[in-house]
Image (cartoon, rainbow, N blue to C red; front, side, top):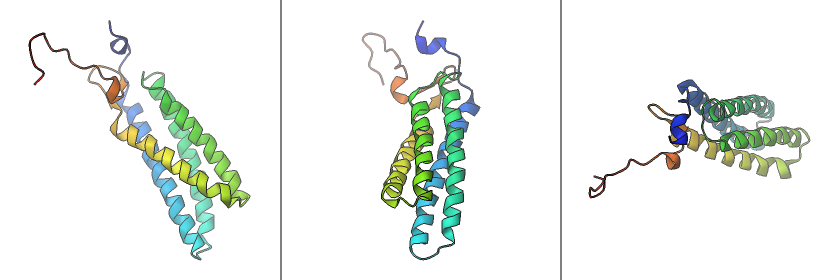
Length: 155
């Protein structure tokens, strides 16, 4: 019996919880860049909003980490989203520290790294992960290819 078929199917709510948290986090990180840009152009009141949105984004990425755990363990999905979500959670903690300390030479590039990693995670969660009809969530590369009988072309 194939190892992928012996695992129980992943619940749809787990896949959707990962999708919702990754998209929400990505939107919030993008909003952070917009708010920072508007602050730099002179709207100093937006620094407080930037701080609050950053705190909420950290909470959302923590929920994303929980969703990635659920996808991996009970769901039988890939483990790498768990580690990427954990890395994002840690990076956001460093991001808060550099922001509160006004260490902008690290804060700005770190924000760009967080945005890039969040975009990768969101793209994968919304496009590459799927729930099979009777199997666990699988990456597109991990899906078994249908066997073609000898002498027939796969049409």
